[in-house]
Amino acid sequence: MLRIFQQVALWEAISTVILFLIAMPLKYFAGIPDAVRIVGSIHGFLVVLFVILLIACWQTYHWSIQRVLKYFFISLIPFVSFWVERDLKKDINQHKSA
Image (cartoon, rainbow, N blue to C red; front, side, top):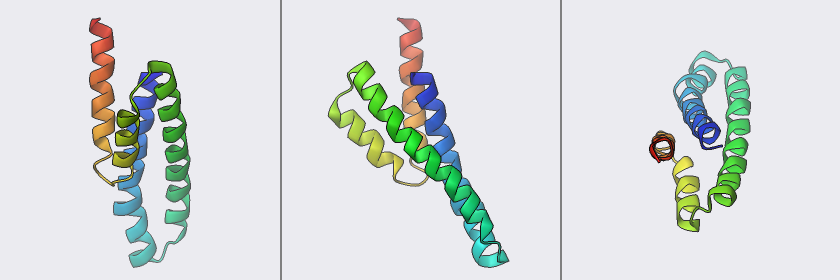
């Protein structure tokens, strides 16, 4: 489950970058409003999936509430959300070594 959560965290972060740096400029500068609608829908789906997996990992791996809240609030900050994916990757590598 950690690996799936790590991948969703990565794609959620990437979708944020695409939304802000590609879709929004296309909407406001090129007059293509569908870009934000499409990318925004994908991003919204990934955010919901991120939260569901965050709660599932909290229950499965007995994470502290501080860790869960940290991941949640960091995921709300554009471009910083890549940190969650990197932190999860460290966790996965530690589980492999053990």
